[in-house]
Length: 220
Ligand SMILES: CC(C)(COP(=O)(O)OP(=O)(O)OC[C@H]1O[C@@H](n2cnc3c(N)ncnc32)[C@H](O)[C@@H]1OP(=O)(O)O)[C@@H](O)C(=O)NCCC(=O)NCCS
Image 1 (cartoon, protein in one colour):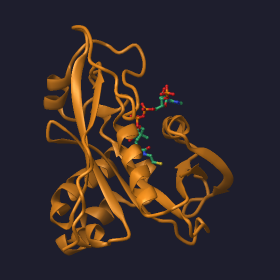
Image 2 (image 1 turned 90 degrees about the vertical axis):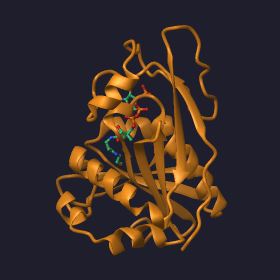
Image 3 (image 1 turned 30 degrees about the horizontal axis):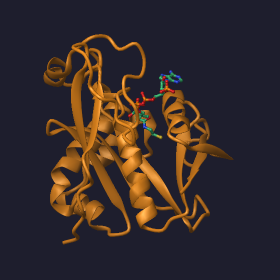
Image 4 (image 1 turned 45 degrees about the horizontal axis):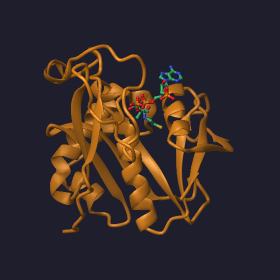
């Protein structure tokens, strides 16, 4: 078994998201006032909870180990159902995978899978791997499978996941963190720009000629 260290908890404070949850219980628990815009600072500088209009939310980001395969399966399948256009992998292929397949995903010591949780509920995930032949950059890590539960969008969960992936990438001595984003995904691209990524200028289509992706980079 490969051991992973737990990440330091990332504490966020923000007005709660609006009623966009896939999970009514989460919506109920987090329900609060409408947010005027982005409600939270990045995890490096958490916004203190002040006044009665804000409700605090603690998000912890941890590195999954092999024994966490069931939670990875649950969250990944939710992501593929909720945002099928965002990922290469198809839900039908993923749902057919065995326990051994899921364990293998988590058992590769060159990769990391990060899970964000709030009150013990999965809020999002992201994967880091060494960049491959498509990226043509042996000194780079690649961000994959970034997904935030709709109930937690706009409150800093993606920032927390990205911050921890940057930590992992630096620990592995990578010089850059890369990612591919669909040109038809303006929200994701806006988030990545805000998180410090910029376009490399490389555009490719891979499996679907109608859906170009842009390669983005952040120097480490
Ligand atoms: C991509 C994702 C992880 C980002 O997390 P998030 O919590 O939604 O991100 P944030 O709300 O912090 O940031 C989104 C940014 O896009 C902006 N935005 C929202 N809708 C937008 C739109 N339709 N067009 C352009 N920008 C948009 C927001 O204003 C915000 O920018 P700002 O903070 O500078 O104002 C999340 O939306 C998600 O899981 N999407 C589905 C899966 C996916 O696309 N994954 C990425 C694969 S590459």
